[in-house]
Length: 151
Picture 1 (cartoon, helix red, strand yellow):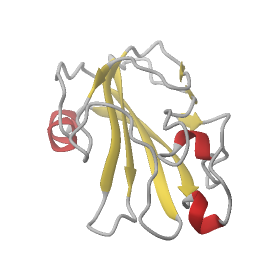
Picture 2: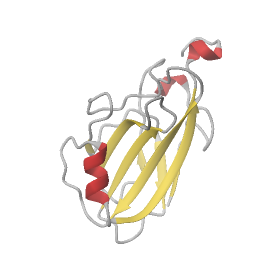
Picture 3: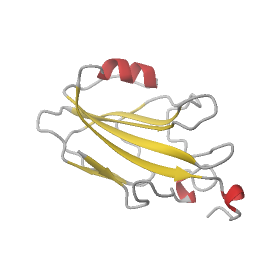
């Protein structure tokens, strides 16, 4: 599978619009190559550079395998509980420095059927059911640290 965003290239900077500094919208995502046997898709977005270990920003499960994109600010599927304990997208907000944000899309051979799951619940339910995975990495540093104004 392949996962991309029209908002930023793999390894590139995530625009302020998608961060806590800006409008805090989830970025648009596009994907292709979902295996034929997939029954659902799951998305996990996290920050592996967070001071206290990997920080989860967004979880979405039970997306139809026929979907090929999520629009900006999308609210579809079953949204899980992130590390702010909210069932929503919460964008990049690193306390200092430039952090990486990993968008991981999983094709699964089953639907998870979890309502407001935590990351650990999703990972447990996905174990042994992942047919394919795609990753997209963006980076972000706060506008104040970059010497710019959020847009």
